[in-house]
Image (cartoon, rainbow, N blue to C red; front, top):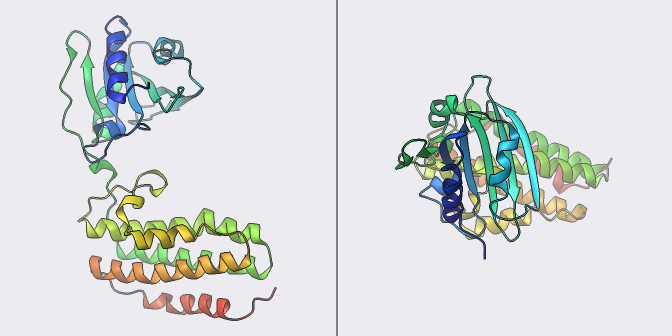
Length: 285
């Protein structure tokens, strides 16, 4: 049976007691987020602050939980902080659903690490042993409400990309149309939806990687409409997905102007009307 991240951390801490290279241990990520419920897929994000950060010193830790199924090693500059320091990162998967994101960094960057994100905490120090972690939360990742300029810029971008999708449909190039939709259009819709949620929650919303936080935050009906936009298998499907996106755009921008006290973007009305006009008439190349 796979160990929980907490059980994995206990094994890491047992090993660092015998590893004089390690001066402190930090834990970050969802394990420190009181707003996140753990499950079998939760990973352990742990940093070893060391005297010598050579990659070879990660080996005994990577072997703690069996033979990895895959390890991604990165030599990264200033993962946290701006001092020109290189970190060694090992994204590691094990049999089952266990995963550990292990990092080695010089002990000199501990202060930068703690200052960088509110989810980062030291849990062990050489000569002391386990230490109570500081209070942590996800506030470093909370999405700020948009300014008028940001709101206008991203709404204009969505409407511009919507035109590219229509162009792809008119030219019968579904790879281009779907690519513009997936790569650029839907992410702009997600940004708008995330702004609406953060305004509804007084600025306390973390969208997460790939906007994963939206899944739990959106009403079921809205979630279903968003998921319908992933059906892009032919011209009719892309057209329906684009119409759905424009409807969500209209509803979401209305909510943002109301919740954020922003003036409506009247100057973008012709661009939205143009997209609807294109969709309501036969598309020609």
